[in-house]
Length: 421
Image 1 (cartoon, rainbow, N blue to C red):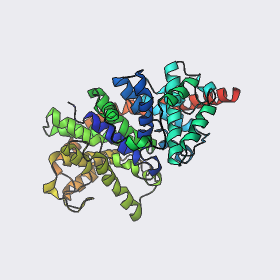
Image 2: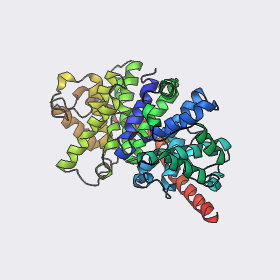
Image 3: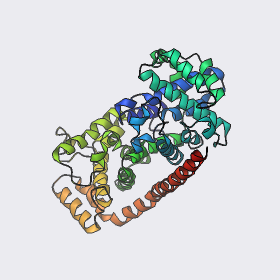
Image 4: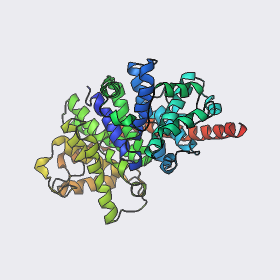
């Protein structure tokens, strides 16, 4: 069942990444637009291929959100780029439907002699197209003049950019000072980016990728999100939900902490209990989540995702909501969120033992903070739920291990190669 439409997945990705840093607001989409303006007239890529390239361009700097290289990225003549290129490549390889195109991201700031390490000529060209369009947008944002940029890329032929790529850019007649004036109204671009249908598997893949993008801020947050989805799905089945309803609960659970993409690292990864001021900032993740999801997901999924902090006695994040306002599925996610937080490792705590978790859930239910019936189901099926979490977490943990191992190998190899050039 397709719960989120094609165009809405793109909107969610755009909004999620825009919340990371205001300096990146719309940067990925503008780079995607420049690539579209270059490739569309040439008819080398059409349909799904062109859409995937545009999405890749939109996500090209995803690795910077882990390495905090944003300060360097927005400098026109940036020279220190390998770290975020490696992370971006690995992120897209392991957590997105774009794994076949991901090698282009590894070399999207590389010079001509470096990009030759890509075996596929199409990946070489795509890497330099993204690189050139990335610099074009940064140059435009800094108030650069069109004529100077044309002279700059012409000087960079066969050194910074492949000759063919410079020719492709010039053939498009893009004027960086005016090209973005028509972007929002460009129906053909919107058709490619938003309306060429994604498969159900691709939609699921992009949802997982959006959630895992928070990993570049907080490893524990992603593990928590997947555990919460596992618990919520298990509990929804126990209370008699239909398969369609279970999919809605699972989707809401996967998206419930998406707003944490906009929370500062020192709060997300703090090693001590948050003070009152930090807690107020943390609470804004629900508002950020609402901004991202509003109009892009089914209203029921949005409510499930956003009401996981609400207590039945009205003491949650929203003082306006009480027990009568919360559906069974919203109550289910609230229990699943707490269960996951208690049994998981976070930056400020270790996993709690079963006895302690059962005690806390029981006390919260007795105080009318969470649904007693659903909490009882969670307690009665505790061992089975933990077993299921372990099963479903293994692929994610394995991916993290693979990323860490591969990252170091790639970095060591690249540094040796670059030093020998």
